[in-house]
Amino acid sequence: MPKAIITLTTDFGEKDHFAGAVKGAIYSELESIKIVDISHSISPFHISEAAYIIQNAYKNFPDGSIHIIGIDSELNPENKHLAVYLDKHFFICANNGIISMLTSDINPEKIVEINVHDNIESNFPVLDVFVKVACHIARGGTLEVIGKSISEIKQLTGIKPVVNPENNQIIGNVIYIDNYGNVICNINKSLFEKIGKGRNFTIQARSIKFSKIYNRYSDAIDFEQEKHKREEDGKKIALWNSSNYLELAIYKSNPSTVGSASSLFGLKYRDGISINFE
Image (cartoon, rainbow, N blue to C red; front, side, top):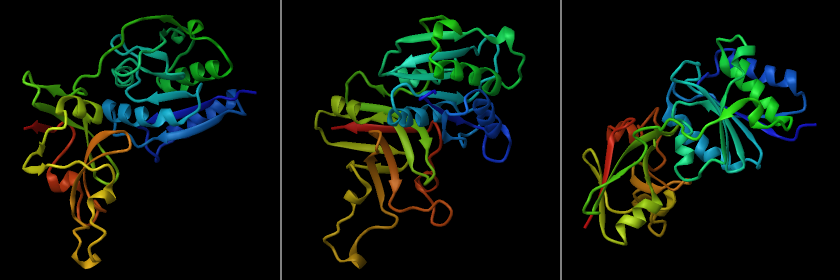
């Protein structure tokens, strides 16, 4: 009986049949397998958004888990299919740069370019190819059986911040906007501490500036003050989120009513964010 978990991260949405069809195909091969939806609400073809989601989700699963990433997965000469063993987890996805966000910190132990397509006729590769590969791995099958080993993968551009030659500025950009409208930047805490070395700093995103970074949302609130005197709702906050990425937020914002960091700061995907050290 397979003990592995298969996770699904796609841009299929909830309206169409695609996610259900993929699950049905998996259960048809392995009735006892566990399937976990990480997300089916990735913005269509949004590779860096999917990379951010899977990077922060997979570490919470047991070793040996198998992660199907169904984003921009149509097979063509420039978009081959991969199976990757990385950090004791398996990832099945297209070679479109999505896996490079994971390999920026951890080297993969094995990468194969999937070559089982000759036996499968498909215009829905997540269903017909990725499922076959995932179930093969779940049964204990090796990667060499379903592909040829390769050493190079396509790199996802625009995900790494830039440090100026004087080491007094980090220039990053928005890589993700979450369900609350909070803005996540590609600058992480370790880079900030390495370059900042304890110096004072100013974060600038368009016309918005911050000079302090919190570790939790509530750290920005002075709970010693009487409630009616506190600056709470609408307070602008820069913090290290649970993944240690720089996040710009508004305390208890509601994107559908009072607005969010994204809408009120005027920030969208790939917009620039800089940190200047004094």
